[in-house]
Image 1 (cartoon, rainbow over the protein chains, first blue to last red):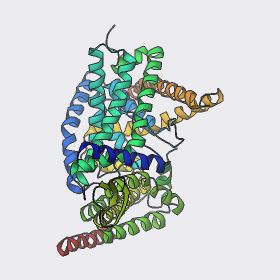
Image 2: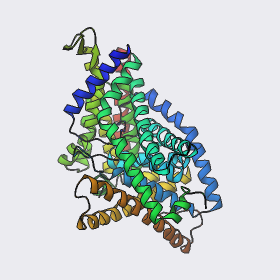
Image 3: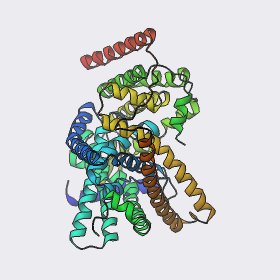
Image 4: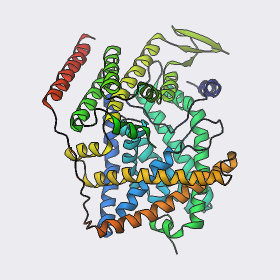
Length: 247
Length: 258
């Protein structure tokens, strides 16, 4: 496909769908049974090194101080609750934040990847978002790719001397966008019937864009608001979680 | 608070051995994903639905509502699968868009429909498990499967904390509404930020208090929970076995024939 054609594809879809959608926009969990068996296993295996590293880091932290255990569990429960609360959205439909960007900034991406698997499992079982066979793929996009991207962007912005609020916004919003791109990639890899892989990728991106792009912006704004409030009221807690390191 | 959690404690299949339910759900789920055919998916959807609603006593209206949850995702991704923008029209339909066509092929429509049915059947397996098995029972099954201890401990605590945090968040939301929060878009953004940060502060305070409470009750790195296990019944195991053998024979037959 040439560039113009790609653009018109994306534009056409966005137009049709922004007219058609009034339904609910949640974080993009791939639903149960939507990926073929091979892909389920492959994405799961791809997550294992990250989970292993996260677990090892957790064990070391626990060896030093057992008090970290309930703290980690609270962090997991916090991510679950934040991601299941309705957030204000422009269209009046119900949408949720992913909360993984916030989690990665507060607790570090390694811990969030382990907590993320548990949260995703609970979301599948208690809220019917996502599924058991797609747990690996969802873990990769939401608990590994998103948090690591958010954390990386935040550190990069801090090094580049961007002010803290802007870097938090960029980290959360782009972490969210990255999750959405990875999910589209996973769907396109598994399902491209009439078109090449690239065409399928663009189609999936275009179809979910009207819900996911506003969501990423809202997620960014909310993360900034939450961290700003925490910086005002809860410096010691932020220090305990590792978000503020100096002084 | 969480509808699935409330329903599963009232299920009539709640006291059936959790390992049996887990094995049934997971094996059936795998059969669906492997085969991806109309016949097998339809059969599984029907079986799991009947088991959950009739044997489990989950209200049919609630069950149907749950089946509608993934619909938005299904709809969007199916559109992405069978709609195309191409220079040449394809065999099912074509709408002219300038010099291009918004078009779709028979094969991809078939593919998308097959995928929708497979996904619905898989979701019904998942619902069979989650609507009939309380979370602590599932954790016991995972312990039997040698899931790492740290993960199990975290899961147990997270499961408990979810409800604690939900309760706090409802209280905060009520308080905010009483004080003119969530009036319009601006205030609801502000309210949500305040809610989440207050929630995190409370969560951290609670976790400190919880550790003190656990330590004063002789916590030494192991959370001991009394397991309520219900022994498996021979009749149920036999039933599951027959069903799975039949299902997998169907899957194999389908693969061989096509």
